[in-house]
Image (cartoon, rainbow, N blue to C red; front, side):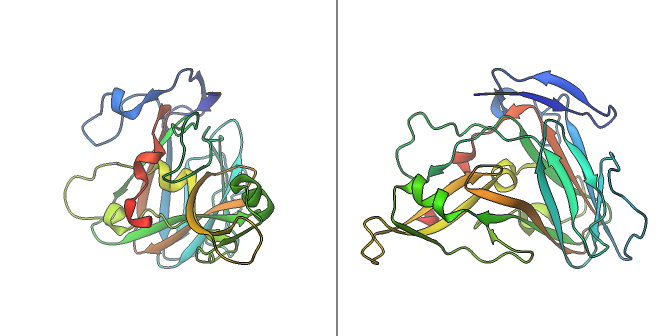
Length: 264
């Protein structure tokens, strides 16, 4: 079911709007820079050489600071509004960003999809700005609740074989990579990264009958804030990128379009 979201534009602190039904990205006019037109929440992730020392809890701004050349943790917290709760990821502790539930259902890639909601309540677009050179890799990570995953798969045992996250948990096999974030010369355009930033793709070895034999290996796309996950965060691996701009639009994206046959 599509919900009411409270969004913000880059110039207005918060703006509530109903999204029922949610329009798809394909049905919305683009601005010429790759992003949809209209109301959005703007978030700037800024890479800095020197750590910030000021207190930035509850900053209620639109900026998060990360190291220019290192990994940083941006914790994700569910809430009705988009908001930066802690803007500083350079002081040895994580930044924290609040965002709504994306309104998606978990599913096994390539399996029965009738009745599964794969269209998000909102979409995320990113582009790199600033001086040419540098890129960042962003991966969504979380602790996986195995009992919940096993119940979802109707399995006696399930083993997640994704890589471990730098700051705990396990990370999606998808990521926003340098092919998207590399800052080149010339005009910078937005790329839709809704699937990569609002879901985690788990590679799972499954034992359905409890005989300690792997019956199948499946890929499960799980949205952030689903009951199978906890302690979600973005692992932001910066390689000299000074500014990544993220925009959150009240339009839907079908995240299943990001599923890759190469996984199977």
